[in-house]
Image (cartoon, rainbow, N blue to C red; front, top):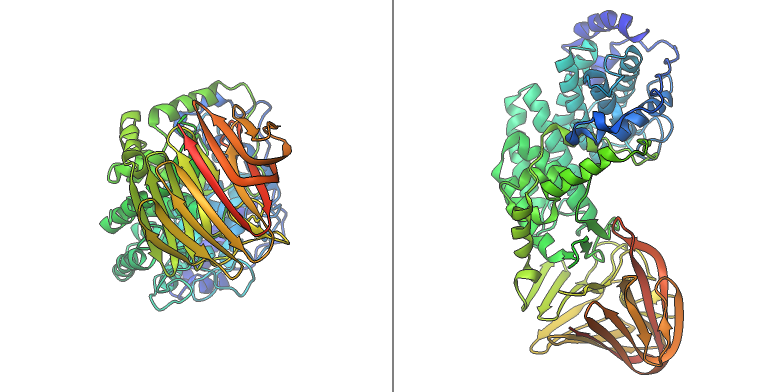
Length: 620
């Protein structure tokens, strides 16, 4: 095996260079890796792994175990993770591709009845090579590249601090690869020096551009400083956490992602990285941030009355399009680490799986006779495995139920909440028979969609959800050429009153919205002929009838010359009226919701000559 005989020689070379500054200098002292092909890692035995071998909290490792040999065997002889298993571009200069060094280290160092790779010399050789390639990419200032070799990337460095500090911890506990451990320690120190510098504009801005990436570097630094204490860097980390609280979170409650909010990055990346950091430091500023964010989620995650889960207020999201969260999210769950905040921020428990329900889902997984499948390429996030390091603090059903009952739109039947940030207006209005949301003003990115963004009813659940990044699925007035008013800035006025009135306009369309206790009325005036587009979330049991008597088919496309549509759900009816007979179309899209896939997106489109009044009445 080539890696192990080299270690004594590598250790001597590193010792001779240990007084040099930074990992790059250490690497320069090492001889080039011999041009020897890496051996192939043996595949799992037929039928392995057995599901019942896993303790419940470690079931998340099963698909990674099934994927390990194919991923390792795609590596090239330099140690680069070829094969496109994680991150893009899948190029040798992209340091993020190498983040699976942690995965290799864990499987090598942790003996389990189901893990045949513990202590495997081929896996150790591959890990050594992968670390060598990873470390060779680091710039002298401590940063790593991502999209091109000369880039000094915040994301590659921030997440690299996390994965490499965790890998170093594994290597030390297992007492393996001493030369690489010395290199890793130096590389982490150099990276922290770069990352924690408040003058580093790549990482630090007055309003953080990508708060999740900044948070990742702080979490990695916290562990690195536990492994190799440094008073100066520890002081910088403490200062950095204070800056994160000031510059990383909007007064509205969300975390900044490209000048606005992004549901996926906020809930699935930023908050778990904060939980990691909180676990390491206990800094109360992090719990305060989590509490503010829980308050934000309370307005923007829409609970379905049947307990299926939450639909999201996705129209304002700046980067991604996560439309829903299942009520129970079995492994692998990117939000699992958020549970560490629940003892100190019980409001977050509303959005986590209840521990009894998660236990039942894990028991069902163990009983499933289907073989454990490999992960799809690119869907192999090593963060899932790092989340297993800290234990779990999921709420029980009672705690979760109490947090759910306290959600603003469930606890109260009448309020107006208007939050602002840098020209963005986030609007929420609750009345006894509806909950209405909107996003207005100067939008953060071209992915977002402005205008009214959702309509929810306490019995019917979410009726309308305006999607981002999709001109065919937003709640909008659409001009010729499929140009919705929602795809751009949309300044709004909020005169209020009872019934409540708000207005928004651009150069081509002006809209006045009037909201009563049980209805939403849109009065639209456009400079040209246009189409009203209403994105409906329908159930297969819904009964859909146009006012001319035409029955609309769930999952299909139906047109009718009518002045309205009735949507019967549960014990009530939602009436949509547009004043005069027009040829309207209700057509299904491909998007479904929740694990059962029963709910489905449909678009109602009503053409008009530039003037139309649409009233949605919720009769329950």
